[in-house]
Image (cartoon, rainbow, N blue to C red):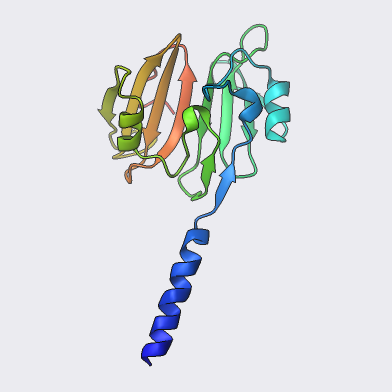
Length: 178
């Protein structure tokens, strides 16, 4: 009996590293040598890098947007300027998707990078930390935001402190905005 328990324990330990799927975001062509997203971009370049079609739509304010849903389930979306260029971008992974997505800007990993790791990584920046309320995208989560160059970086973490959203914008965004 002890042998069976030992074998099962050993089997589960060997399978554990493979139980949490991991994907590459496919963004290398859109990042500079410091792993920062290169702006401006075009919807075609993003579509080509990700290997998925661009979905164009307008929000409630008639603002044009481009959206991409990757094979891993991660969603990218961006408001389009008058010239149809991309100057801001958002990366979001839905709560029900447990895939780790690597190869993001700043070498972050969706569903693996924690708020503590991010605070350490970006300690040289003036980080604004905010606990998220029940009425936000990630209830009981955490939001870290800071300025890096001309851009505002916002990281949102779920209640387990795992990275679920990354935005690179030109202005600070309220946590209650979905």
